[in-house]
Amino acid sequence: MTFKHAFRIKGIERELPAGAYEVVTDEELIEGLSFPCFRRVATMIMVPAASPHHQSVEMISISSVDLADAQQADAVASR
Image (cartoon, rainbow, N blue to C red; front, top):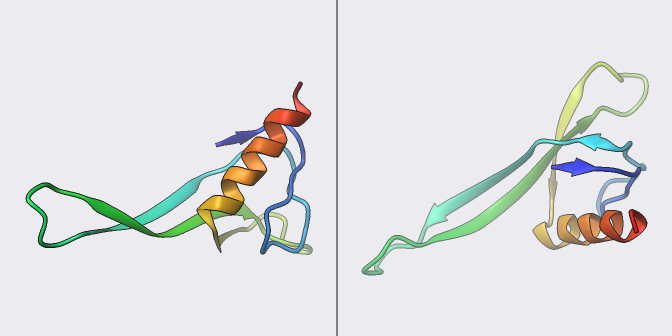
């Protein structure tokens, strides 16, 4: 996922720089249905670590709704 502007996501204390980010989702199979169906149980984003560990990357658990809100804000800022 790419952000064109610096952005914030609820639950992360700092502003994140514009750029490409890896988003990882964890899903589980819902049992008992006649067709395969999955439920998202976690959404995580890989972000540059906070100072002084700029060379490191950390995986932070976030809400998929908060991620969508950050994407929307980035799209609006691009107009």
